[in-house]
Structures are given as C-alpha cells and as structure tokens.
Length: 229
Image 1 (tube, helix red, strand yellow):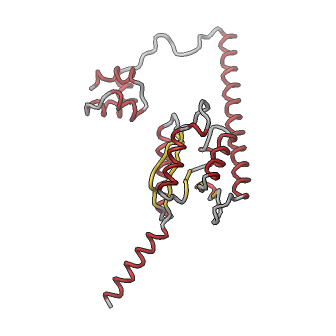
Image 2: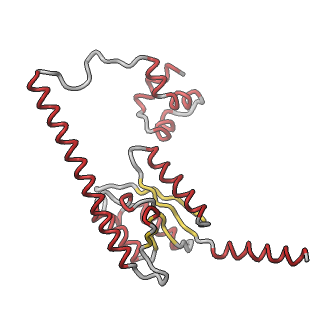
C-alpha cells in the first residue's frame, strides 16, 4: 500500500514537471527603476501561480536609435528561446513592448516569424494558437490596445507642454524668474533622508560605479554623499 502511494506521488510529480511550461520574462527598462522591479515581481508571482518555470529574464531597452533586428537584447532572447525550447515569452502589458505602436507590432511580428508565442499577462492574450499559428483575434486586440496606449501618451505629452507654456507665459508677464532660486541649497538632513540607500551602500565600501548601477544616482551626486560615510 505504501509503495503504491509512493509510486503515485512520484508519477504525479513527474507528470507535473512534464506539463510545466517553460517561459522567459520580458520587462521594459524604464528611468523609474522601481517600475521595472514591480514588473518583474508581478510577472514572477503570476508564473508561480500558473506553475510556469521561468528560465530567464530579459530587459527590453526601448530605443529609437536602432532597428528592432539590431537590438542585442531581443536577438539574445530569441536565440535563448530557440536553444532552450521555451514555450512562451511573458510580458506584463502590451504597452511595455515599445515606445510606439509600430515598434511594438514589429516585435510581435518578429516573434511570430520565429514561432515564439508572446503572452500578455494583463489581458490574457497569446499571439500564437495551440498549433503555433498567429492568433488573429489576439493580433486585432493587441493593435487596438497599442493605439489606445499611444493616444494616452500623446495626450499626456500635450497637456504637459500646454502647462509648461502657460507657466512660461505667466512668468514673463509678471517678471518672475523661472527655475530654482540661485540661493537654493539642500541641507545635510535632506541629503541623508533622500539618499539613505546610497549612503548605506557607500558605507559598505561599494564602488561609486556599482552604487550608480544599483540606484541610478549620478556619480557626481554620490561624490557629494561621501562626506556622510
């Protein structure tokens, strides 16, 4: 009886490992490092819930300077997926794929051409069907969502530009000097409060360059913080 139970347990475990999907995560790098880590944490938690095995994480460095085919991180991801028989690339939301609709659709097309499924967590969309063919419904929904996201970004940019122009006009009309007052200087307490993490890392004798990579704080600012170490 005990042997039978052990056999069934081992069989169930092996079956679970067999059906477990292998995925990689694609997270968009942003100037807001906290946003990047939130993407990563949410995707990892979701994959754990789905019993998906996360093999690797790739950073999507959105840039208008290079063609999609020339972007090293994307080519590395495609190569990794092919060599490791990965089932899907998982991304948090469709707007994290690129800086505009065309760039994001090009990435989806590139993945489709390489028979790589893209799963969008926020909308439960998969770009390929069970037979590995492009999913027309997912393609249509993806295009609509990308257009809406781009429209929202343009609207925000227009509002910011309008507010900036209004501020400049008022300052000129009333003779107000724009920008930070020339006498402004942060107090030591303000520095310690704002850069507590950086000071803590510097106290551990971590180099300026490594602290800069970890926190995103400029080396110039880190040099100013050394007096608190």
